[in-house]
Image 1 (cartoon, one colour):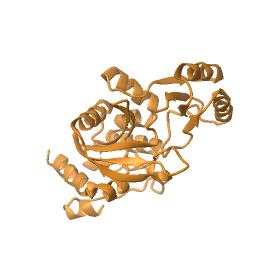
Image 2: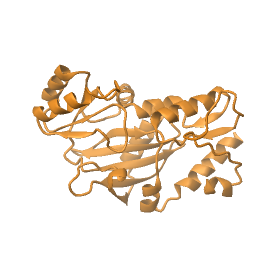
Image 3: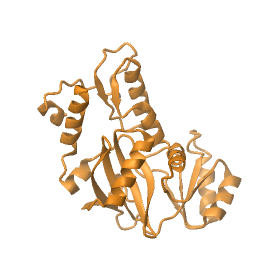
Length: 262
């Protein structure tokens, strides 16, 4: 907010947790969509779009970024490399998927952030327990399993922020001792890394395929090649800024101002 105000942009802050939204709300020129919840972000963007506002990001790109099955389907169509993955909707399918992928493997639901419900599966017995547990949950999404090949270098990954089709920079996220997930929300450590041409081009292409203007692209490096793991349609960037010293808020504000002039 401070960065936007410094640039002379008039703001109207709406906390969707406390303020109801309506299809008759006053139209704004641009809505910068920031709810962390995927559903809240999609709905907030959709309502703003319905009354004529431009949204960053738009509701469709947030939806495709937030659902990993949709994300990987888009990647497959566009030829973007990602870890070998199989979708399973029940225990029998999960068992077959585990045998095809091999152990250890990763099991994660299509929707979720911060590494929640993402599990390192060491054997079939572990997978069976996960399936039985998730069958008790109400969400149909939680009952869907993405069984993914475990990347040997999976205790760290790269995150690239892309804004307006240009990479801002990259960080490496490393898991803390005793965990294999590199999410910053779980205490993962971050450090700035050089953004090489291959990493840059892959991140930009992934953001373009999903359709977002401001996105975080999470990428593994495995067997001398990059694999896109996930995309975040409402990226948090505090850790990124601290590591890279890049003022993401200022760059985002300048981008919004540029869009306003179009």
